[in-house]
Length: 458
Ligand code: ATP
Ligand code: MG
Image (cartoon, rainbow, N blue to C red; front, side, top):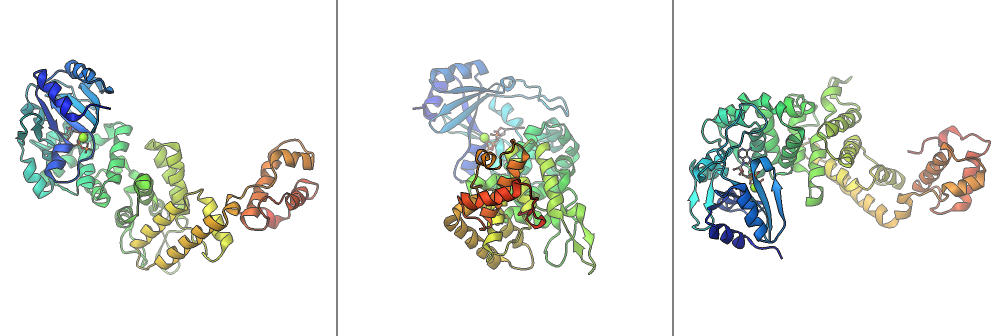
């Protein structure tokens, strides 16, 4: 069993060091919301002392960013991150702060990013330090940079992204001077590492108020620097089926999409990217209205490129691309064959696509709920009653096909297997019917060429 927080506090006290709880937990305690996330502590103990005390506790410890002297200690309550008081000095515009250690809690709080994060509670006495009226800003629901706002962001432009991330997580707004400071430093975003940018964008997307966070990102002019594919969405007007421009529609979709913890990140990303293709394909239709023909195809290509640039995991990128590509699919729920093809194309993710379609529809001027309910019911029925058809395996494997047709292995095997599995999917060949499958395979693999209408079953 890992030691608890109380033990950690006692050990620092016994060793004669101050230990203050800072960061998110102090903020969230004062906001009176359930506490989550790692506990951030700050102390006058130097890094090697933090490590020594950590080791004494006989639990997992981790050195986090050695240059910054943070020690991670695994406690019963979760990870505690202990950082020696800082007195940072920065080389303007550089990516890495030139870290120096501070000598007091005041000095340490001075260099924190927002007033609501610049509070600390003494772990022994319970005393609260709040030099910039963070409590007042919690009441006003404001994100305010302590001190000279412009300086704060030139010192460390990552704070800009932390700020918009907090807009989404906390539902606070950015105080005007702070916003001006962010705007003045916006070009410095280009110098941040892709890993940190992507991590902050994802936290923003996963927050409780993602539309507000995205809107803040737009307002400070960050889109062209971080997500240029989205920068042409604001002002991209749509037609009478839509209440908003492409940007307003996109942020509304991100906000509306139904999620659970396991699919939160994927679904919010999918909602953000689903209409990427609209600005580049927009054209005037014969009736004089805006058209977006093939936007899901162009959008899928853009999503793929974006996922690669942001270094999302390969499987995430592939899945996002698939969801963008298929978001306009609209199979007839009464046609089992079309429903099964739809589900098969989505490779187990039809629920994610349906969630996307429902959210997409939420800001349209027409209501498609009835259609989505019917499609959902149809997919559920297929899953239960037609699992074998949906799985659509070729009744014959490669070995059996070679024995049957007597040809060397080659691409012809995959071609016949694909065809057979499609026939199963379409209900034209019973799953596991080797006899009929052999007849079809012989016809395809023998001397006769395939009739043209059988070429493509997808
Ligand atoms: P979360 O709930 O995401 O953990 P947090 O506010 O605790 O939010 P952390 O990244 O854990 O954020 O950082 C802990 C504290 O360290 C912050 O509250 C802030 O005071 C300070 N901090 C973190 N990053 C910076 C930064 N780039 N510039 C200034 N202060 C920072
Ligand atoms: Mg934290």
